[in-house]
Amino acid sequence: MALNDSTMLAPLLTKLAGRCRLNSDEADAVLALPYRQETARAGSHLHRQGDRVDRCTVLLSGFACRNKFTGEGARQILGIHLQGDAIDLQNSLLGITDDNVQALTAVEIAHIPLRAMEELVARYPNVGRALWIDVLTDTSIYREWLVNIGRRDARQRLAHLLCELVVRQEAVGLCSGPNYHLPLTQEQIGDATGLTPVHVNRTLQRLRGEGLVELYRHSVTVIDWPGLQTAGDFSSLYLHLTGPAQDFEAAMALEN
Amino acid sequence: MALNDSTMLAPLLTKLAGRCRLNSDEADAVLALPYRQETARAGSHLHRQGDRVDRCTVLLSGFACRNKFTGEGARQILGIHLQGDAIDLQNSLLGITDDNVQALTAVEIAHIPLRAMEELVARYPNVGRALWIDVLTDTSIYREWLVNIGRRDARQRLAHLLCELVVRQEAVGLCSGPNYHLPLTQEQIGDATGLTPVHVNRTLQRLRGEGLVELYRHSVTVIDWPGLQTAGDFSSLYLHLTGPAQDFEAAMALEN
DNA sequence: CGTATTGTTGAGCGTAGTCAAAGTTAGTGG
DNA sequence: CCACTAACTTTGACTACGCTCAACAATACG
Image (cartoon, rainbow over all chains, first blue to last red; front, side, top):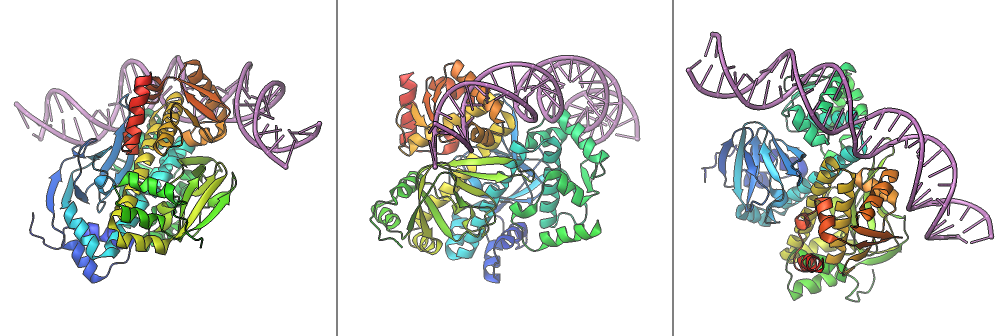
């Protein structure tokens, strides 16, 4: 277990403090959690369907995606994970995971023993509350994705996904302003939205042609934020963000 | 607050005990929770998007569905609730709900003050654990629904939904054997699977024609359970059931 | 019994999928 | 640093699954 230098787990603290106001004792206790640090390259699995989960893995930097395969081998991406996300909180108490989490970029992760998390929560109920809210927020995101995939057309789905990614990256301080990183290939975007890569390609071209976004390599520039939100039928409420996120939305609204 | 006759909350206890083994003290404490009972007719809202949630609502009998609307007014059904389900545990800590829950049939519900739930959990951590597992199971179901809607065709989606409903009803003792209640109209089935009612109608006819199920009124009879599971690419693992549910699957397997 | 809701059928259409190939970018090793 | 290769993006032609619109039949309900 690494000697704790008190800053490595800052992304986790940022996330939790955004969920539920924490006092300095609680914050210190989060930063003081024991952990084992690891790096993994793009494409590697952070956990696989069927793995036994007895730890809490936190994404310290980089991007990961959660996915699941059908019996026919088709992949559905279930969500995108950013720094600060607790990857397998969602499965920890169920014992066996029923999904995969895979690094989209090179990532740094911290493994925290489940026991240490349980002790932390027992001692600081407020931290437990933050974890609850965090998991509930994830379920809220799943619900919005169901609406997106079940009831919106291709253009709306893609615009919605782009909106979510910019708002979430803004919320954890990964970008400021309209330019941000899109760590997904068009095939992966298709897997996240229930579309084929070919159709993703054509529809993204349409969004560009409409002057809503610029896409270059894996970088996205939002040209027309109100327009993109409208195109994606997007409202950030389901992300249950507080503070900075709303500020961002206000700023973007003024800018345009 | 109703005088507690010690049996009304049995469906909740059944559900929780299925999630995490509870001793008799814990079980008694669940049954002793204060509650206010209500009935509601089919179609009425148990909560609406934007409502402030400060209680825990348990479905004692009947069926309900969770749904959300797009800006264009299309409805996506996010899940079906059976007796024993804690309807707004998913939103309780988020403050404001961002989805609707609507009765599909006449329902009996019990409102439990959030305060009482918190005290129960503080006193019996094992009950808290059961609640955690329950919410995590719901997120697992959302993930499977994402796979279903994102990556399966109409026939698979419908077969999968039928499989889920029979297994879950069996798990809470609502049916035994291949015959069960389907509390959804074809339009609602479409809203749950991302299809139009017309296409649901045609695809259900196909499943009947293939000798997999019989549908009459709002009753479903599974004719070929292995066949239906194969058609729906269904495995009940994501429901995280224990005990009786597996027994059911074994029984059905023998029968066919 | 009359009316609203739900289920069924048909015809035609369109969004998104499939297949295939060429063009581009990124990554790797010599 | 360049050559080679694999991965990703783009384009075209064609297909098909599921949607739309519309009418009618059956069922549920007051």
